[in-house]
Image: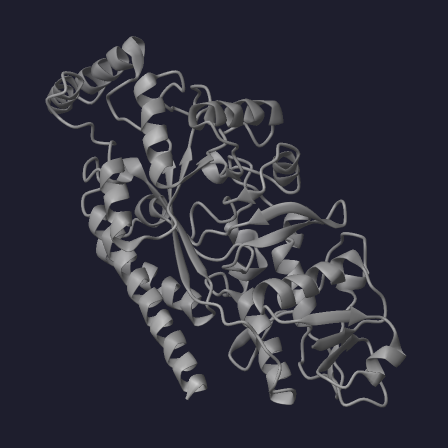
Length: 456
């Protein structure tokens, strides 16, 4: 068993070591502040402190100050490149096994420390990706948290080769946001008439009027009703598919089908028979917990089950308020961590990990599932063609596979309609699924080969 010595235990330090050793590296470990216990320990040991422990041959990682603080203030991260890996929080000690503090670096990224500090926001109140340390220093598209954890693992194995780490495998997690389940159907008389007038007068598009009328007469399929296609494809690959349903009231930014509509309710129940379903908290719900509570209850009543998953619509939330509200409402899994207009690793990670609430200086009962890409990011914000988007997906999947993480991505049912400028994006969706599946199969084969070698 690995024993880790620290001069003082703090909430920040305990959280970080647990996340690294328990959740990412998955090894047996213990923490001690007693020097004599550490010296007597005969197995693997690591000293994380300002100075090395005399009288031992343990691995020494010089600590910076961050994990021993309780205040929130500007940090001098001093990013630099170390052996091809981005690094922050440099340390200077001739005996330190690394020239930076990986635990402080991991905590800084996972806690979203910089989002508690003053920063510029966009028109929706979201942090701009251009404001982040990762973007400014060229590692937004790198899962640095897992990379730093694997560096720690390699250090331990180089000194203590018998240390056991449970092997993780690459996984793929497709998620679908249901902003509007139908393009034409089930929108009520007023919205339907308004749509016909808009198409016929403002857009001068009689063909769309004809499509709308034929759909309303059930002579054509509704363009946004791609759910059977999505479910059928997923049955081929059997990934953990998750839908997020928007059940807020109609507003400037929320235009869902009414939660009272029987067809929509039956659709959600059908989806719930084949996959996980979470709430897609409406535009204002991150600021108004009563509104979010109402939306959660609506989904729970439809599906006849508790709701534990959330993704805020427009990815609109601020820290720590957005996550504090989720915790109070019993949401334990959030999928909002990412950027609307840039792919990458907002918290530096591609793993579902507990969240540390900096203002309260404690870990809370909420797991953060960071997503890496969203269809509208490539199509609308970056103006990529389907072929260009596929290359981006492959590159990012390769980054995640290299650290045995989880590639979580967002698609929308309406964007798989092959209309309205989204022609060719079903091919993207299918290619991403196939490429991810190939990588999971390769991972399983490699794992089997390793086990066969061990058995031999």
